[in-house]
Length: 415
Image (cartoon, rainbow, N blue to C red; front, side, top):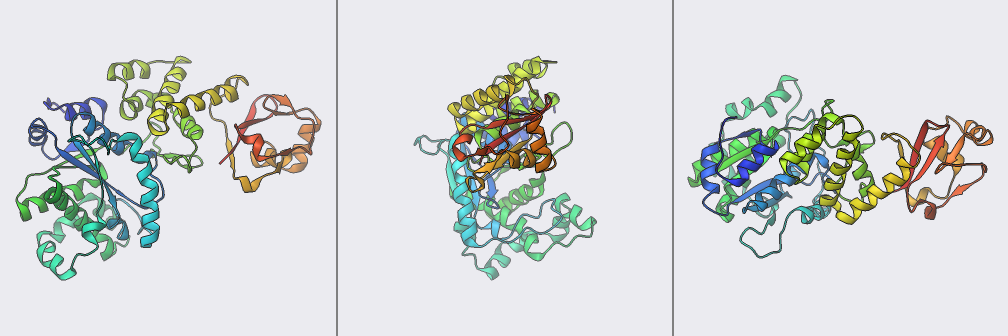
């Protein structure tokens, strides 16, 4: 990419690694330097929280606002009723309107940490729900006025659809309508709010291009699209997943401590790239930290974990998570990848023998009892002597560390 941007926003997107493609670099750049411009990203309400896989999009909206423009977070109250088929092998399960509303209420919480909705400034963000204009569409009018602008041949050529058909996997008519609805969203946001930019992951390219084309054809307005790369970690894993499932952004679904630990366990090769994408540290500092080697890279991982957690959960939560990690890990001199058992309050009280088995430190209760009898078990680095010991909810105000011998450790925490 040799384009030299004039606008702060595109400069940041390129410099920090957010940019995969743009429909018209120069046109968008010229529009952005004229003043505050609205841009949006849509988020379908398929769960009660977004996860780390959506964080790159949230950071794009944050940078859009920081460079003087107006972010629009579009909740997909309408489109979630259909389900985005992009690059999926199967149809999404259909949710009831009540489930969708409940999910939207959960998703909304995270945005306030990243984006300012209430300042009253020209670039204060908007949060909208596309159900507002999609729910009452008249089917025949929509087919006549909007459907006629879409070529089925062209829609079939988009990679997101093509990959599904090439694998001979069914694509329902319901799902096929999704890209038409997303295109309609872009046109409606342009008509109502002057929105000139849609952003999304590179899997959304076809949907974004359709929206640009529809907006030109129906209301003759020039709009733009910009995509971010689909992120995988350096070992090829999809961003946002960990060994024990999705890394949710809402604290009631993934504790700030677990969230911090996810970033602390970043592989060495990803540290510099993740610092640029998920923090606001200067690019030069991100490069310097990412280039560290050996034990020094661990200090960079702590900075990454602190910065990302502070943005999502607040500086106090980040500091508490780091302090807990130091207490649990460094005093025992153990490694990073500690298996973690998360318990609900309903699971307690639980016997220490049960916990040793559940964490995988022993294969059976008999083996756990023998470990305790032979002085091989420890609780927070203190030898365990009572096989009948019970752990109450109050004992898990902070995570506890269980050890079998000198090298095998696990963490137990309250959900």
